[in-house]
Length: 406
Image (cartoon, rainbow, N blue to C red; front, side, top):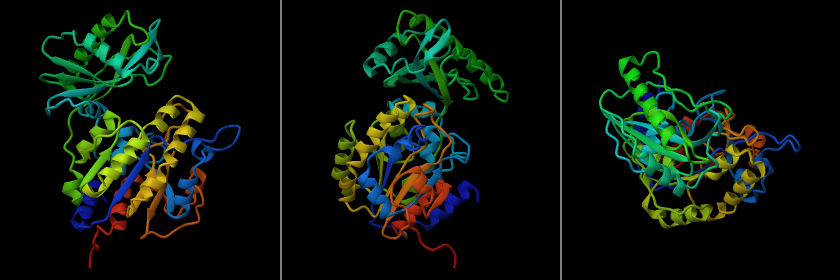
């Protein structure tokens, strides 16, 4: 069944309910076994509360996009919200721009920016040592002096080394290549038009390359952030929202701009929260009566995985575990704990491995899983399934879907 048809069927089956749903996403949760112990970060962590929750639930593994496909954070979260990421494309640039409050028209072109370190023409650090957001803002102010004829350019800081870049003008095409080679040891790439992009793509690639040429001059005396690389060139999509599809009063409790942006695009109210999991759970408690569906995003498991810091990722998982009892004390009708993708510390990057999942509801059967980990969840009652099916399961287990057919 095509995604549009599937979503239409689920939407028509949706009914009202007072049930409460919580989706707790530990970004990049999945990992790979440490060579000395044979245990992943999740299996290494001391997680008594998540282990008990797994015992009281049904578990499984989810693929965000499909077996063997490494998902970005955008596709990974879209799938968790019930959208087929192969049919609904939201570019990383749009997420960054909306996340920092930039107003986009349908003609604007947005890109995600990394400040990076370049030495002898080669990228030595794609994240410029994770510079502070304050330093990022200073550098963005310097870059704001760049002028390109025929186009308006705006750059704003996002968080740490990340920024959002928007081009405004005629004939801007998203059908161009990234300049981020995605790993250190290579030079920044030239922006190129995609084969089917046409003359507008050629024009846009020239504009991007001119901007990056000037950016290199502006940042030449800076260190470690002496260059920028770009990816995810995109324009605003037209996504059907969760309230329109399912009648949900949905809310997001997220600290990073990109995830707040994605939540906005699918119709969630983005709640104000502090940077810690304690702040996020407190926000959940304060807003419990106002919403039906809560998306809580915890970023730091992914960051530590990308850093290659196995033990730091373990500590992040343990930090979240300590707050599970407070979430359960609210008595959600459905509680899901999972990741949007895997970020094994051994790879220092996103990977194609499925994410472990706990699905807790009084209306679901229990299985034989006794702890929360990749190996244990592989034997769970839900098996391995596409993440885009999760929303329908959550709606069904909150008694929000009527019967299909006679």
